[in-house]
Amino acid sequence: MINNSENSRLSELLNQYQEAFRDFDNSKPPPAIEIRFYPYVNVNHTIRIRSGKVFVRISDLFEKVPIEIHRALAHILVAKLLGKKVPDNARRSYRQFVNDEDFQKAALENKRRKGRKVFTSTNGNYFDLEQVFGKLNLIYFQNRIEKPALSWSQKRTYRRLGHFDSAHNSISISRSLDDKSVPKFVIEFVLYHEMLHIKHPTKHRNGRRYNHTPAFKLDEKKFAYYYEAEEWIEKNAAKLKRMANRR
Image (cartoon, rainbow, N blue to C red; front, side, top):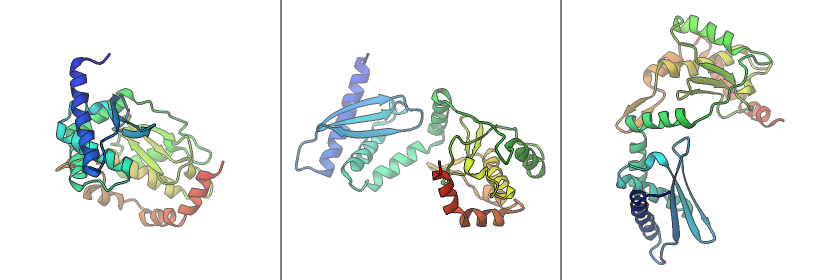
């Protein structure tokens, strides 16, 4: 059930989307538009057109954000729908808002509350992530990193070889690396990189997020086989892609 307060808010947002359509093309009236807040796990927004009507779904994290941020979002989504260039001021305002530390905390809590994390085994066909983590933690972190949930990814991937999920305190490593042709130092390097995200959490400054700070990059190069691992990953990118696409 939609109350009067929500109706008033949606009506206010409708004006922003109608204005955005006029800004991009003032030669014709805006189409019919339906706007709803949706309980996405992540900070997602969608815009689609069906039978001449535009449907907008906005993350419910945006229910109470300032109207100027909704104005920026409206211009971003409408530009995407029409294949137009996103205005620089809209892109800048939106990014500055969503990268703010307070908003990021709210988004993280939202993901933690709504999200569902699927874990597989730590023991792969060729490498055991538990053992690799223990070795790295002892050598590089003096056992100061509290062990997160470790898991091989469900599918083989090649664009993202590792991922630290701060919402669920977990590290997943691409199953593409669990192969006899992959040197052990490559697995160690990818896991070491993700462990550094625990040691060096994301920093927020002036509306921007910094995942790889100077301190992070300095520590990353302390890995004994840093250059060898980087070189191997670069040279084998095509091979990893084939492995990921292989059934």
